[in-house]
Amino acid sequence: MPRLLIAICCLLLLNQCNEKEVLLPVIPFDGIERIENHSSIWVFFETSEGDTLAVLNKNNKLINTNWIFNIDRRLPMKQVIPQLENLQRDRNKDSMHKKEGMKNFFSYADTKNQRISLVEFPEIEFAEYNGQEGAPPIARDSICLIPLLLSGESIQAGGRNYSLDQVNEISEVIATCDSISAPYFQLQYSGDLSFQQYLAARAGLASAELPIDNTEVILTLK
Image 1 (cartoon, rainbow, N blue to C red):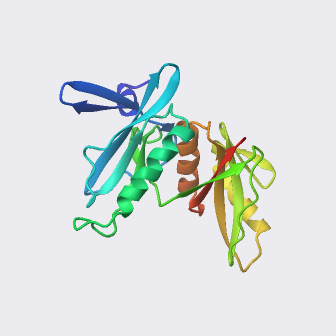
Image 2: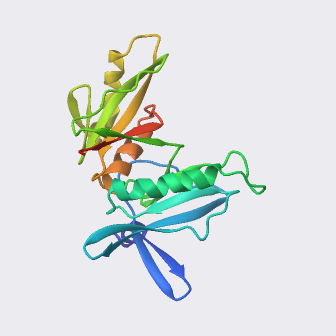
């Protein structure tokens, strides 16, 4: 692996005398190259007594900037989601220093362009559904919701499995919607899905310019 790629796959946070690393998701899709006026938020992978922990460092977070989330690819989404929910609440708090128009982004190692790239992380509502086979989409007026089931390295839509290399072909499922409803794809996945698998799917869908619903369904078995 080229030295540059090795470097961008692993980000280091230097905090006084401590050095901690984040292994970024490795994804072969174009993303946003850079943004101005940003601060970084880190979510580290740690273990304690056999349990996996998502450890947050937000010391550099400024409310009047864009936020870049550097999240370790090894973490399962069930550990990442609570951190994202808390940070979304922080973003929405009233503050005299708050600046309108600031956005959130995920970072990843862009193997196509040999750099760190970004994908936008919009305001997301995470909803639980008791089941592993996918949830029926929530009906909303004038919107046709198409469920996308993320499972490992594949995406299931309209009864077909797509690999990440086939992400552009997912648009064909839009034909199942009527002509008067705006189509949106709704991500559904198990809480055990890794952040690597989650962000690879989201970056691929963003690269294909497919419209993604802001509700994501977490599939559970209770």
